[in-house]
Image (cartoon, rainbow, N blue to C red; front, top):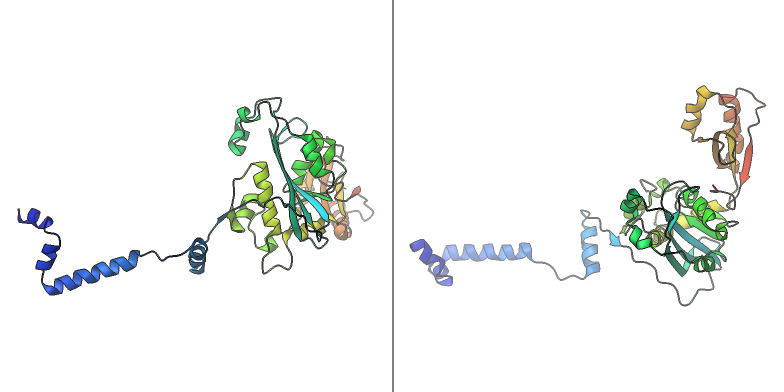
Length: 332
């Protein structure tokens, strides 16, 4: 009964304690208050405090850039970042179900200016969307029912551009050109393969890796969201780099490259070719049926020397070559 009675004494019970015990209790309460006190900080101060401790890494939600109401005259060139979602991987039989595009200006030094337009549209395919595509993109049959991509709105963005950018241009360009002729006869660049992300300190080239290491998070696998995400990564300035990833990409798009076909190469050396980066073409797309690789023009002589000495063992071997610009690259 005494224990139950003491529970209701409150401060009277404390007052009845010896002075030394009261002082000890007050000190404990003071320390506890200090331990759990939250300093008065705004959001930016909290971020700076946590990151400055070296024990935390903060990811910021990626906020899309607004479409500019006044375009800076210092950026005279135009580009579009484009992304597609499709029913599968084969542009000959699968279909686009979503296109996202962001138009922006830039200058000759590869500096990004203003966002000038945004388009995002869904398209109902001729088949039901496969379950794995819905899991990946979140796009359902109900969402695309009765939907059609506005080709006139897309044309308004695409017609004036000097460059179309996709993070996997080898995938997106064939699908886009099969969908509409507005994407043909335009220069394309691939932000996945034409930027040396490793040299910029990134551990992978997938958009999710790039976004995370750049300090952002976003809603991935929806076309417009992915376009805005890529724009921020390309525009990001790192103190260790003299230029942005976009400047590097723009410069790469201006260089001519050469596709070399190792026709009639010995079958038992296929692993050597594959290990060097050659890919197999079965001839169904109009290319020679052979292993092939794409290199900068400056590397052409070295690559031909490799084929003649290590593969053909014949100094006069003359494998077919095809010179490519941004207008030709990444076609189906």
